[in-house]
Length: 618
Image (tube, rainbow, N blue to C red; front, top):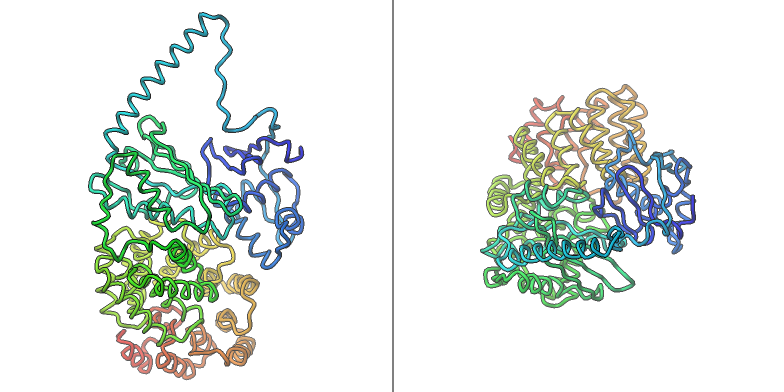
């Protein structure tokens, strides 16, 4: 294939790659793909039908010499590419994986040189006129059409739109660590525009579902019953962030208004206010700041607000280091802006997650989470996220009645919150209310179809409710979204084991060990449980013993996997003793005591019933 410098466009299927501008388009519409995945896709597409090894990709794309966690970084890039192309790893149309070797681009490719295509954004020239009369006619007709269009559009702009859908912004070349800008900036706009009485704003949860979708303005207008679409794109150049925003009329698919901004990436504190001021001036709106409680308004200090946005992003990472860093960042935001309620709600959620990732002792950490959530509510009772955070904390403190009450308040305040629906579904599943939990988890996935955490929760709900085939399918979908998500491997292996598909369960756990090789990992226990169920008791007991030796220095209680592995080995007394100790130590996974399918054999045991009663789950 030609040298990439001379390539103007690469076409495959309905997609177009533009090396010069770093853009991926589908049927002419830009798709959201960060810079690093774009470079990987460009490399693969420029060598169709060839094996491109992982080493070649590292040398070509990781040119800054950074090789730490390269495998995970490349896997993440491939996942992002497949999401953008809607490619299935099991039945690929574009990118084929050659295990432990590399990747092959398998779709037919067409290449056009830069001389053939020119710059993509260059306007197409009109057909050459064959006479001066034709030329005068062409300009007259074009002028009349432009005048008519201008009058109609300016009329709509002057009258002001009645409804707006704000789309997730397109990241043209943002590095992975800055990708959150493209979601957080429009999310903040939606929250502020929603306070405008004269406008109907589509909730952000529905907008999030449009990530990587290529629907046109008319289709979006018909689906969401809006007359305008606000869309934007972000590009980074050194330390400068360039933002372009435009308002599109649904009826004509023409741009009513556009706006450009450029600033230092460390200077985002006033970006929301500046964008709102531009929108307010152009659309003749009055955004009633007084209607927004003071405790909900972002800090005016730019660095503080940037830190808050970063902490929000880290909260979804679900790794010990990232969640702990998010907690530190939220605490620093609160130190600088003690009256900002959303920071307390974010801190509460991150603190509640910490015990699950074995980064903090449960009781003290959950007490801090509850205190932070209550402080958020004291500052702003109408903040739905604060009530959801308090419900989350109560849930993990095993205060079931208080959790149910706070979930209901949160959903009444914001029924379209995907995160609240997700947490509520897990709560319902823990109480044995499987059908309700499945409905709630499905709604959460509908609201946020690209979230691997919410997808994981649906697989968890299926597993706890005894729908093992559905759990297998949903865990696979989660791994399509995030191929190295260890919790998804857990659910998949457990569901296989419950179906008696032991060899598949063991292979799944072997893959998991590749992503989580640390000593004392709970995956050893699920492997032991599967081996015991398959009749390999001696090997299972050896694994359990190894786990106990390796994890003794950091164990804060026995996880549910330990109880299940002992039970599978026939040690009922040991399993029940471990259960009692785990409840006393408030081990996080005990929230699943009532519905864990691997414990079915002891549900009628008097000692098990007593432990249930101790947790108020009887």
